[in-house]
Amino acid sequence: MDHVDHILVVDDDREIRDLISAYLTRNGLRVTVAADGRQMRSVIDTTAVDLVVLDVMMPGDDGLTLCRELRAGRHKATPILMLTARTDETDRIVGLEMGADDYLAKPFAARELLARIKAVLRRTRMLPPNLQITEAGQLLTFGKWRLDTVERHLLDPEGTAVALSGAEYRLLNVFLNHPQRVLNRDQLLNLTQGRDAELFDRSIDLLVSRLRQRLEDDARDPAYIKTVRSEGYVFSMAVEITEVRR
Image (cartoon, rainbow, N blue to C red; front, side, top):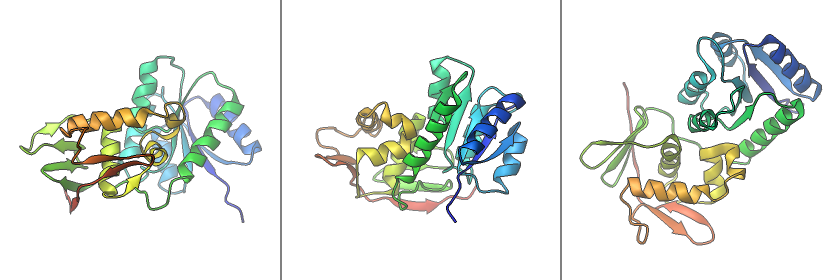
């Protein structure tokens, strides 16, 4: 039997939940709805979900809080599409920084939501199965630097925490999980930015440049992140992985 994608819609507005559920169901998707974070947790802890449609403005735990929770737990790989009534660009950026794969402002056309869902699922499944982000609870050591995936801290040679943006952290984590392997821009963009890669196809180069600065890596002769002409980037240094229990 062909797989039917299961979409979880989390929104405190019953009318919106019902409208989205009815439209997606008519278009061949399986849909479960939740009114808040408690109901969301109940669903994802008992049922496999292919994508979460998550409203930002909800009482109690808002969508940004729930997005952060999903990305920090065992459902970190589940794609997230966020909905909001806000038009502030800052909210969109914050949502993407926290790991959302796409962001759609209300009001929206149901057909556009369906197209976005299909695009996110398609891009997610384009990734090779062996390109997985490390699970939380590891200390990744490379040269004199360390990345703590529990605290999400980059530690310099003196043990001082170096601030990383969400996108910088995700990119470094990807590199450290795939050392000495050439990764092209599409793979890196999918793993760090999801659908936004379609809109900013050169943003990975800027992100690599920023990460090199954090690592004090000379762009003309980098020790860590090397450019492979016409192919992408490779993290050239060996990485030691230590399990962390806290």
